[in-house]
Image (tube, rainbow, N blue to C red; front, side, top):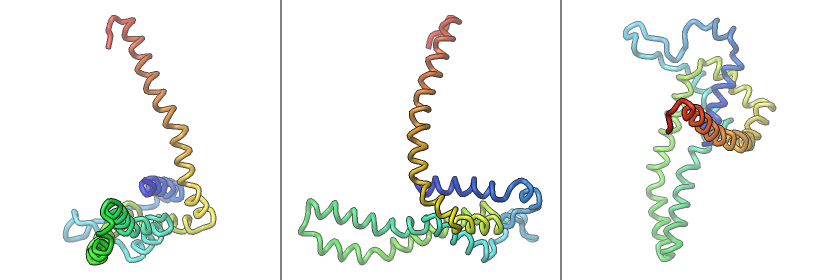
Length: 183
């Protein structure tokens, strides 16, 4: 969920950093420009765009989050199984060590897909600008406070949204009842 919020914030930040003038100056999006032989095939991203996307995902903690998923899940499995079957600890550890490389490979593939999503969503310049922002002192502070901010945001917006839903239904029922319709 943190990565989702961070990616959303990333796109909003990218739009703010680029501004309307920069958008108007761009005539084509580098990652989606068509090739001369097949207009439906997007051009491959530049190596600089891929590097900038990687820097951005590292700064945002997405790369580490994906890399830590396999060990975390394996540790949880070991904990859950050995709680009820302590005699399986050594054998299960051997199994987990043996199967880990395959799952690590899937984590790398998943990261590649996430990186590709970002490269296709933003131009090389935008990626570089946002990566520079997140690696700046202000960007690092933003990344540090973001989880707490979004938790506090949810604490404010969640109850309001629930109350709003209740109030809208009540008001609509009241108004419709005056018109002779009851739901």
